[in-house]
Length: 117
Image (cartoon, rainbow, N blue to C red; front, side, top):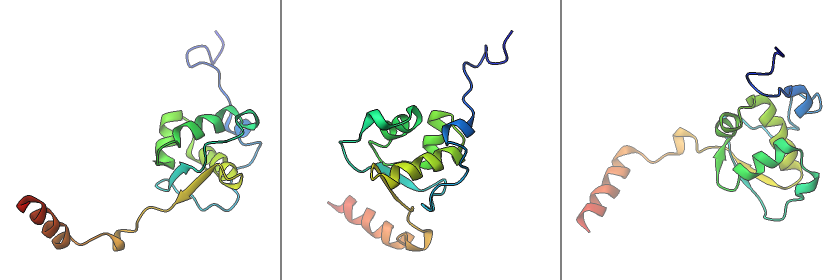
């Protein structure tokens, strides 16, 4: 029995990224949020994995979610996302730091105000 028969075909991460192990300076981490930047991507020039990522990026999504949904290692997703960002197909933003989140008393005041409406 071939080693791949139970799990389907195996595409090595090395093949997906062309041997690269790092993205081109995008600074993405697992909780970075990415989203498609435009509607008119050149779908014919994309690798199948990049096309799958771009389809997921139609709504804001984290790098970790993409990795989990595609069952592709996060390092590979980061490299492929770096290429999509460089081409202008995807935009990324860092998640809001915990220090910038509103304090609990502010959130409680907002909730109390909404309840009074």
